[in-house]
Length: 102
Image (cartoon, rainbow, N blue to C red; front, side, top):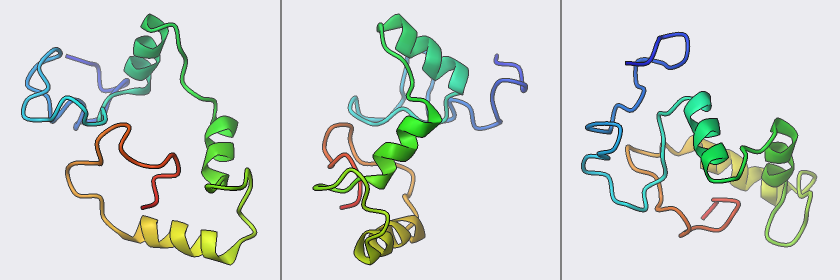
């Protein structure tokens, strides 16, 4: 059991156990984990989580530009994407463009 200080009520809600992902496909993105768990996993793989400014930089890019924030079409696509509920399952890992807006 994870203390409420470190994780919300939905923590690992889709998993049967810490090593059993339930009915989720093997390539499903991992969701409903704490930042602490994600950071520990990344460290165990010799990696790290991106810093906030790295996320922001990636989010500002499109397929051809590092910073597309001044483009009205880019902004419209972002707003359309935010307006659509994702549903329970997200796209499989590695099957979408980096910007995720398809």
